[in-house]
Picture 1 (cartoon, rainbow, N blue to C red):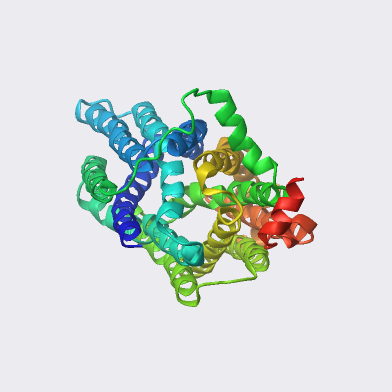
Picture 2 (picture 1 turned 135 degrees about the vertical axis):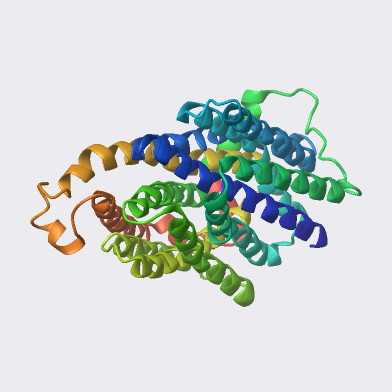
Length: 428
């Protein structure tokens, strides 16, 4: 557990840095273009290369030393940040160099993520899976809890270049932390000398599709990622319609306190059972709070609803993590997590591809003063800039809750916590 904590601390620092960059990039692109579409394009390119590389990263994580894969992924991801920094420094201040740099960084993160996921299983016993997952959630929440406030303050006195330099420095810290725990750990040797990528790829797919319980959960998480991507991408243009970047940063940081609260609660109570029920209830609640966040322009109410929304996510992620991790053998977890990332994060990709365009060309006109919903929905949530996005949040939140409720009746999800004998029988 001690070595896991060292890696966790490194990832916490790195996550704060990457969160600052993500925040700064979204504001930088929006201020350059004034378009939610370009913001969603930047978000899209921050995920697509990672998703495409995840299966490769998963195969490498099972075949070679997972710590080495993490070091390589972290180190080379800094190249994308350097590219953005050099372009801005040389006077090329368009949005295109930024999204290219984001894509380069994302490409190498695809090597890091499966190795990190599998490394948790290397260092933590099954009894501590929930506790370890809560710590991972706390680290993940830092990009929403700490990063926006720090980045917002820095951007009020400097520009995106300072953020990029800080992020590169945090990557260095993470690499050193990972290298320090590698000592004394036996490298993961190749399963056999006849390496066949397509065979390894098939094993990764089979580890998911061969278990109906795991596959049902992965499908559910795909839809969760799809809806969560809306609030992640469009909160920036919605808030900037009536507030400045500093207010946005502080609001996002305060809102993300919910993730910290949820993660701490999970760490304290150390959930032992009822994972599938908690998962469904949390998803339904997340949808409700997401809808409420779109009903108002009052910054305090939005923060309150967002705090409640973010507080549900650690429960969703932890329950999904434990249910999957406990049903997949350790020797294929790298490949399994690689494929799971492809499937679930495809939800982000689909959402990023459509949410910006939908916000600009469908929902925005609906809630302008002369829009078709100005006299109906507009009387409740208001009209003008940003209100179309608010309406999108309402619709997406309702759909998220209804979908979670429907999946709650899925017999495979109700069987998630079956014992290992049940798992063996289900594969026959």
